[in-house]
Amino acid sequence: MRFMVMVHATKDTEAGVMPTTEELAAMGKFNEELVKAGVMLAGEGLQPSSKGARIRFDGDKRTVVDGPFAETKELIAGFWIIQAKSKAEVVEWMKRCPNPTGAMGMLEIRQVFEAEDFGDAFTPELQEQEKRIMAEAARHAKG
Amino acid sequence: MTATDAHRAIEAIWRIESAKVIAVVARMVRDVGIAEELAQDAFLTALAQWPEAGVPKNPGAWLTTTARNRAVDLLRRRKRAERKYEEIGRELESEEAAMPDLDTALDDDVGDELLGLVFTACHPVLSTDARVALTLRLIGGLTTDEIARAFLVAEPTVAQRIVRAKKTLGAAKPSFEVPRGADRGERLASVLQVLYLIFNEGYAATAGGDWMRPQLCEEALRMGRILAGLAPQEPEVHGLVALMELQASRLKARLGPTGEPVLLLDQDRGRWDHLQIRRGLVELAKGEALTREPGPYLLQAAIAACHARARVPGETDWARIAALYGQLAALTPSPVVELNRAVAVAMADGPAAGLAIVDGLAGEPALAEYHLLPSVRGDFLAKLGRFDEAAVEFERAAGLTRNERERVLLLSRAEAAARGEVA
Image (cartoon, rainbow over all chains, first blue to last red; front, side):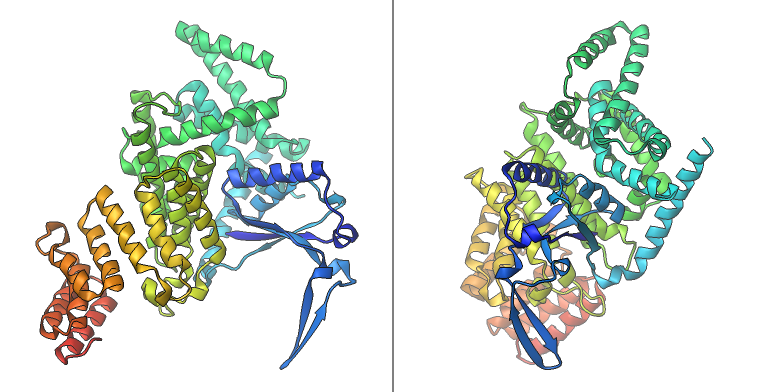
């Protein structure tokens, strides 16, 4: 399965504040771990929205608006695409990420749609996984 | 976090760390079965303690240390029975004392130990089935059930296979070190063969079946990338990863709307995974930079790259593909390679050139039941206007193929040829 992990933008990323050398080194090391584990499919930083644009679609109408965009909450500053067996696995990986945007940061994880023909098969697999976890948990609750 | 959430998180951490933990312990106890058990013990301890105590800051180090401690206990107990383990026990004790920063020390060593485990799991003394099962189990971290479903065999069969594999290794007493001497080439070839086998099993799987099967491609790729990180100076490793990335990039375009296979030249290239193609091309470049004599995986990857780079079939560099098949034939001569070369040569230089090569394959026993030989020959003959001969070949091909849709297609080509048309 693939997951996209998005870095929420902040005032600093929008202002083009560059990461410090230490922050870059730490992030580089983390990315190296993802690569060594064979799960890193893609990872990029995005330039501030001042260099970007939006296209509004309304029926046949197309309206182009150049950045910057005021609502930082609506923006992302970077992304990874990670290969993993479950959402829980991506979560555990990304917990190891150094703070992506200074002291405060937010990462958002979304699962990528794979070939439609997997559709039905997902549920039985996840159900089995649930059963296995519940059984293990029950075994350990008993001590 | 509920108990189930905590357990799910710990299981996810285990998926991430298990191969490295097993690798470290295996290097210590020199036994794959015991290493797996001790690693499992550490996992179960984590499951019991972490929900209450919290997940440690470096869970990988915690698991490895816990498993190592169990291994040290085991070795000390053995020491009392067999004096020769005393050396290892003493070594470990002084190692323990001298280890200031556990985290960085583990990072440095684990790479070599993990690589050693990969080589051990793919040891040539084991049957191919055994190597595949053991690799998926120890390196991939798949459960016995997942492996069974992936290969469409019963779970007890896989369980038995793994038990016997561990016994065979126990008897053979491999070194668990990374081979660096005269046998490195053969040992590495064995590893690459196992990974490619796993990949092809997944690649050949039709959609709609058990979802474990296509997931084999992901597993093979992940393990291949890990290997590329551990042995970056090996060109064929990069070649294999490149080949797998490039082939996998076409997975979504391979099947038509009713599940029928779509030939590469007919595929909707918009459905190719271009990020994956880019990764494949990067790996190919890495491999090619390391050697002036590309091996079979690099060559096959280079061929796949020619297709991947063409935005439309008409842009395909057939001359280069033909040349690459020529190099491949020199390294690993096979009638199938020759047949593929004939197709490429025909695309580059015309059907007469291709026919000349195919005619040379007429008596090949290996191709006697292979429907693609008469199919390709029929195609060349039709394009040369030799329609009667073409019709005979297409009919022969139709009789040899086991795929119904393909049979129908070949018969319609035979009919077209009988009418004097190139279908």
